[in-house]
Length: 604
Image (cartoon, rainbow, N blue to C red; front, side, top):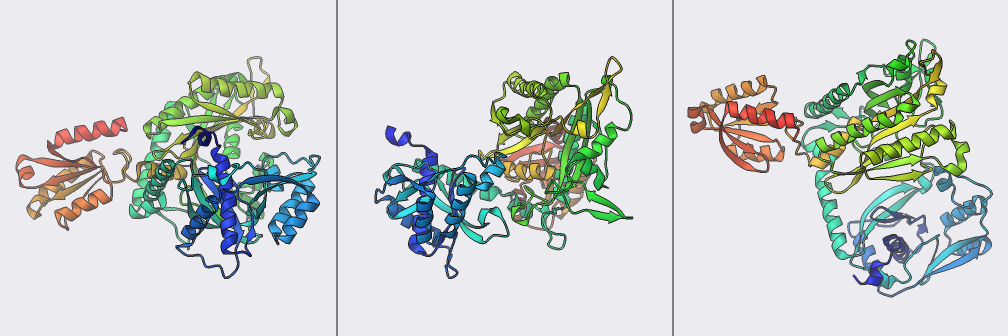
């Protein structure tokens, strides 16, 4: 790559490719209506309303790719023009691009598109625009703020690929028309593209939905309903092992576990401010003329436990934990295996503390998070610290001095642990700043896991106080903490992290015993009983050929197989075979148990 090409921003290349994709689509379907075509992580997409007779088939993406490459080879310039609204409206009316006219209407009224402003909570009707930017490439014009390459010759035509076709509602609203979305990925070099496509291929092989079915971990039923996972025996073992581990770790760190019901009066959530405001709440139900809701979160329940008796400063920090299933209304189109569900188990924690305890407690939580990531093989992670928008503090509750202390405590804790972090200014919730920890998995994909949310608002809503050293009441601060986030989502990430090949301590089946013949069966049964007596999850397979059983052992990604034949029967030993390493030789049962217990204890 030459220096000039190296200096081109990858975002500009990807944005330019979205326009070139639109040109290719219009060449194939001249009557297509243009939606929007933004840059996304690793690439771009563009939404279109295609003609009703548009034939989408297995060759469509390749055909559009070829058209895009021909357009790139023409060395076309991207020219920016500033038009008045009247000029822009005339342009897109002549082009019969109705969606662009709708966007222009919002730009004229609000100064930007409504969705962007509402999303960022910055809707400002005073910022009116007088002109809009149009980018022209050849005969193609698009409403766009930029940026772009100067000329298509700056794009490496061997470093992009169209990868997927999907449906998307116009402006994300299911009341609007369904559009066709073409996704593409793009990089500066062909090597980068090939490396990324290889990771995509690996990701498909590791897809937790695919492996969940193959390994018989979980399923979904149309009779039960979308978004409600059903865990099968092997999947439940995984879920329980995760919950068992997180419970033990929290108890060692001073958390007290509680249990709360799945329902509560709607008044509880009116008090918290969630009722009729939190869109993910399920519809209420009626019991004996009283209105109840299925809980979407545990905090209001945990507050009732805190309020059960007067609290002294000597009790703080008070750490309450629960592995609790909550229910949320997620739109069908947003559901995604275990990653996005309607019933989820949170490893939820609420810590009640004094303001001067914030820094130390945050450090304890980050230590816990780092221990967790080490156990599960996540080596690359960083913290996003979401702070307030200092120019618009009127959007937040609490006072600025408390916010200053809280934000400094979060940053100080990250620095103290020498953790990589970045500031998300203006991204804090209205009730307090927070830390989200982003981890990279084995395929270099980023996931948000641990969340630590400071809350100054609910202590006010619920009058959460303690008695200080002078015998006077003071407000507590609440920390909302989830180390896994949700057990279901964390499990989905782990399935893909390990590719279904779980470490011994987590594996639903840890060992299979394979007798070579009928005369070896009795000793094999004794081996199985010994393993189970030592809390090893084991099975015996006896009905198929040895080669087929070994192949199934590998397909099911079981950590160990024990082969028992004449030699092993005579010596009262087993021939041990390890996943991915093959035959390890003959070993006594006592030595085997020692090896297994050591590996399980170490959580390797």
